[in-house]
Length: 266
Image (cartoon, rainbow, N blue to C red; front, top):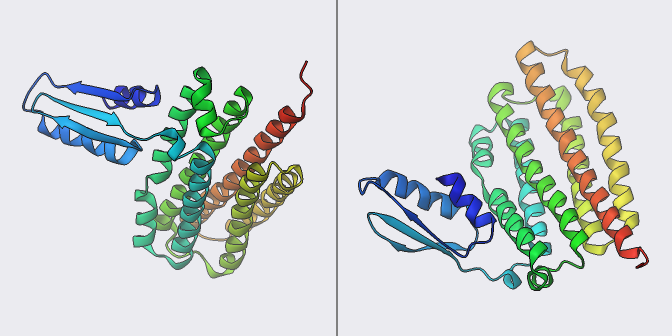
């Protein structure tokens, strides 16, 4: 039922009614309302009874265009990365748990998917959310998915706090530097998107390649630790590398969009 509710939201339905065969399904009704609050931006429960709930999307796309959604996803996902890195460097389990519990990036990702699906079939919606052409929809689909995956890897870094504890001091400074480089890759890639700047996109891709090389060096040093800590550190380093690689993917998508905009019409 949850999957169907989300599928209908992503498909662009403005009003959805969920009916219950058994009037005693209060727990399921409560769970569905929680899904609405935590996964579906702009959706409210507008009617409810023992046998049904009705939800409606009240958000106008012009109030939150796609570029604003992407920028908000960037801010939130990178804050998750930075807090996860801080948690593992300081052995801060409560902060790590806080990172793991955050779901705002997922909510925005679902909203962007809904917007893009509507835009593909409706030129008016495409204009409202700021798409220049149908080809932009493909680029933004990859970009929003990449930012959602950045948040997922922030969660993975935070989870490592519970196995690694506090990061070994000999790795701490370089892990912080590596993480900062990965964050800068994503920052530059979204800046390139906003400016449609090929030079900034190329810089982002180049920095991502440096992150990969740096991660490989640190990974070799992690094997000097105990087996449990080494495994946890390797997972963290891999997640940081993946953050940079997803940033590079955003830059690549931006370059494709720039090239399409420069193409001569036939």
